[in-house]
Length: 283
Ligand code: PAF
Image (cartoon, rainbow, N blue to C red):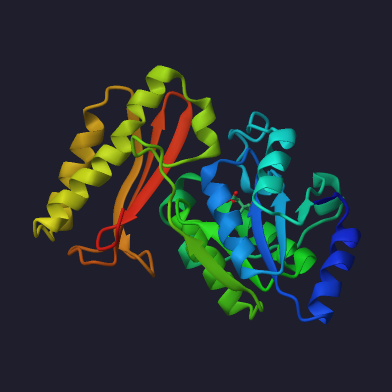
């Protein structure tokens, strides 16, 4: 497994497989890898001849008062997981090289970036789209894999790739959950044992909505009331948003169907957690 820190070096390594017709599979991450990332890497391994993982805590997708400085990092462990998943190249660029003085270009996916996390994290998806576009130009993947826990991120990246004719196949992978149902996230590391218990309210709310939907309930007003009330039972949980939206356009709805997305963002203590489900799909 090669570890590459330099952009030109990474680009040079990407050109050889391209010329030889070998496919590059790419998993972009911010590190502190967990089983969710490992599932992307294992799938990537089956879809490409060369598997590239990037680890880069992207400063431009964090707001001023967010957790950029304390975002968890463990490069040694990440490299062990990468090696075990069959990664060929780990690309770990520096922020100085990614964003040198004078940097000012950017990619914005307008409408899809506005609701849900875009409302509480203005500019976040511009930062994501921009870094993913840069990483695609550096790694030159044929296929890139992303987790569905960041549902809106995946929608933004799919739109960007289609709209800008990027020759990359985007693969969305199912959410990987802990045994008790909590969605895996690097940010779970922030939770104290008590907060970890409170964090269960997200999956409990999702289960309740799914249960009602399975029993035939289609009114978003009713589904919303029930979902919010499950979260409300935990005294420490603060709702950022609970939204039922069209699974492709992310537009608001009044009536749910199989492709309706339920997306949640809830703060427990100082940690903002997100989760989601598509009502007609398997959890
Ligand atoms: O999902 C993430 O870890 C990040 O948002 C991504 C896609 C690697 C861009 O920094």
